[in-house]
Structures are given as C-alpha cells and as structure tokens.
Length: 96
Picture 1 (tube, rainbow, N blue to C red):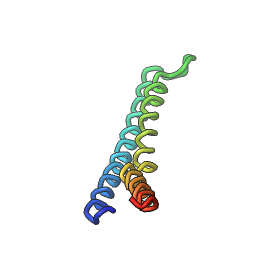
Picture 2 (tube, one colour):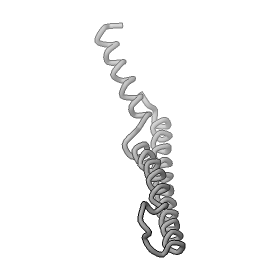
Picture 3 (spheres, rainbow, N blue to C red):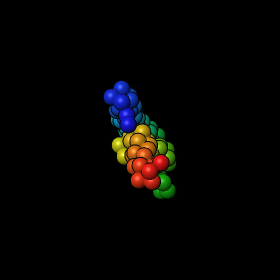
C-alpha cells in the first residue's frame, strides 16, 4: 500500500505533467499562429497546394496529443499500484 508521502509524490508528478501540457499547448498555439502569419505575409494569397504551416502544425499537434494523453489519461503509478494490489489479493487467495 502507498504511504501518504508516496501518494503526495505521485500527485505532484501528475500535477507537473498537466502543467507542462498546458504550457506546451500555449506555445503550440502561439507558434502556429506565428507560422500562419508568416505564410500569409509572404504568400499573401492561396497559390494552390497545401500551405506549409499545415505540416509543422500536424506533426507538433500529434506530439501535443500524446502529451495530453500522458498527462490526463495515464497514471503509471496508479496502474502499478492496482496491479500490485491485484497480485496481493491473488496471493492471499492461494494462501501463500
């Protein structure tokens, strides 16, 4: 079982990852706005084809999506704790 200190450390790590995600999202949005502004200022109009800011936006967006998943939908410490408790219960059932 987790001690209070271990639980607090786990919550601290989760809080840090969520704060890091929010900071990364803000940087992503600002930089993509900047990329589109550069594209608009240099091209001024749509010449056909795909505008270049789409590609860094898609790649970076995929990385942001993974960071979101890890920050809000994954708790490796909680997963480990649940697995440990399951194994402990299984051990007690067998009488070991």
